Length: 257
Image 1 (spheres, rainbow, N blue to C red):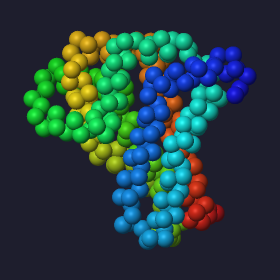
Image 2 (image 1 turned 30 degrees about the vertical axis):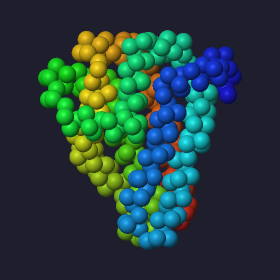
Image 3 (image 1 turned 180 degrees about the horizontal axis):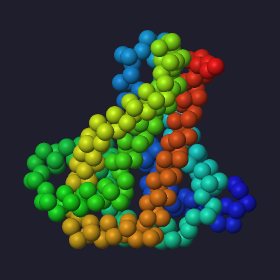
C-alpha cells in the first residue's frame, strides 16, 4: 500500500465498496463464463495447442487471483478518490435495490427466469425503451461489454502469433482494422443483450423510479461512482489480458526482431 493510500483507505472501506458494487460477484461470473469461451476455441486448434492455451486462460481467469488483484489495485491506485462520497451514493436505497435486481438478472436462476419472461413479455413502451437506452448510456454497460471482449481478443491474437509465420506477420494496422470492424458488428448485438437484460431486471421498476436512477448516475457524485466502478473493473481486466498475452507469447515462443 502506498503511503498516500494509507491515509485515505482502510480495508473495511475497500470491502464495503466491493460489496456495494457486487465486484466479487462479477469476478465469479467472469471466471465461470470464460470456460465456455475457451471451449469454443477447441476445434480451431490442434489438441496439444489447445491444452496449453486452456491452461494459460484458466490460470489467469482464476477468481481468487482476480479478487486479490482488484484489492491490490484499490490499495495502490485509488488513493485520491472521494471514498466517502462513493460509499454514500452506493448506499442510496434506489441504487442499492436496482443494483440488486441487475445482479440477480445475471445469475443462473435469473437468466432462466429472464428467458421465460421475455417469451411472454408485452412490447415495451417507447418511453421504457428510451429509459433503458439512457441507463445503458450512463452506465456504459454495452460499450464496456464490447471493450472487454475486444481487449481479450487482441491479447489472444497477439499472444498466439508465434504459432505460424503468417500469424507473426499479423500487422498492428491489420489488427486495428479487424477490431474496428468487430466493434461495429458487435455493437448491435451487445446493446440487444444488455437491453434485454435490463427489461427483465427492471420489470417491477416504474418509469419514474428509473428516471430517479438515471438522475443519480448523472449527478457529480454519480459520475464519480460510475467512473470508479467501470475503471476498477476494466483495470483488473486489462491486467488479466496483459498476463494472458505475455504467457501465450512465452508459451508459443514469439520472438520479435
